[in-house]
Image 1: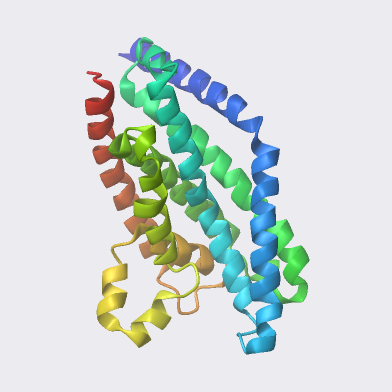
Image 2: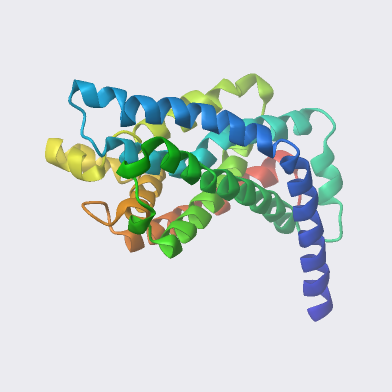
Amino acid sequence: MSISVFRFTDIFCKLVRTHFYIAQQQLVSKIFNIYIWAFCSLIVMGHIMQEFGLANDYGCFQLATIVGTVGLFEIYGNCFKLIADFEGDQHINYLLTLPTSPAVVMWSLITSYTCVGIIVSIFMLPLGKLLLWNSFSFATVSWFKLVLILVIANIFYGIFTLAVTAHVGALSKMENVWCRFIFPLWFMGGFQFSWASIYKFSQPLAYFLLCNPILYVMEGTRAALLGQGDCLQWEICCMVLCGFIIAGWLYGRYKMKRLLDFV
């Protein structure tokens, strides 16, 4: 038993290093791309829109949501690469022949996605401080809470990547990844609004939005970065996201098993 666990652990670590080595070759490019998006968003929402009556602290609000959203936008590219492999070189089939379980192979992918997502998310903070300067203070940041919510959120994004990939299953359906999953979850997940503001507007809509896992990422990230305030409780956000992780893993593994026909 101990030998089997050691072997699985060794294979898992080697797979994670391999996946991350491949991913890190594009890491600088990913950070640069996200910087362009973050720069435009923070300049508009943190400075320009204040001339039209937007709250002075909205730039910080937007920064927190950008930090929490980075991993979500990685899903489309990761899904594309996985499905392209399924229909092309089928490198995944080789990995599934290794002397380990399919779960180890899938978790190695999830772990590499998680690591990349966390790194890119953290790189948003220096840019946010530079652009917002006095509006954003590191003194308000709870670093323990921020790191933990980013780890949990990016694990969810990694699992969601596999679940969506297995659900879509073909390059001809790739547009569904954005239109049916990423965009609605992001746009209705609190990127531009807080749950408290929606609750004041419409309680039924607010309760309906609690079904959206991205809402907990946004609220938890804002609570960690800017202070609890009127955000959903940080602890609740973490617990609910863990529930979504479990549900996503069960569904993703089931769909992957049907798609790739492994035992």
